[in-house]
Image (cartoon, rainbow, N blue to C red):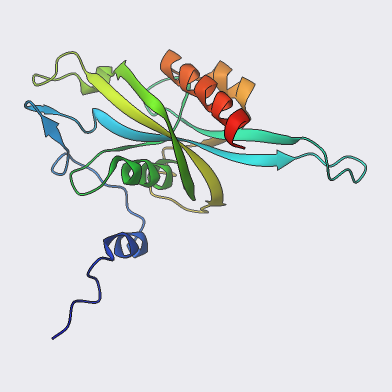
Length: 188
């Protein structure tokens, strides 16, 4: 009997599975007794180009918009994230988070950097400081889903970068947007 048809195709199989958000902590990563996930997350800055064509000018400047989502625990906007679980890479966690929280799919591009922050919701007896680390990637959006796992609690907002900076819930996200802007100038 030959190899299984699913051998080496874990990613293909996962992408075909139903769109259901992962919940719970049974798959999270641990280091030194403290959970890395959701303390260690894959986040992305989803983006697209909005073209302005005035008077048929096809050479018009491309306007970059980034996608942010509402926070379920307070004011301000966030970038989607996925807690890094033990059966996936941090890149897969970022892609999963974009699908689950924001309902978008696309091409995961470069790593923008690592960002450390404190989370009040992750403070517990194991990690009283609530320390978190985010790996932030750029995600070029190719598809907006009509329905997605967290659509009842999440609202999508497409913003130009200057508007996004004004609406960031956290200072470290503003820093990530600045790094993203530099990356755009060089890469795109």
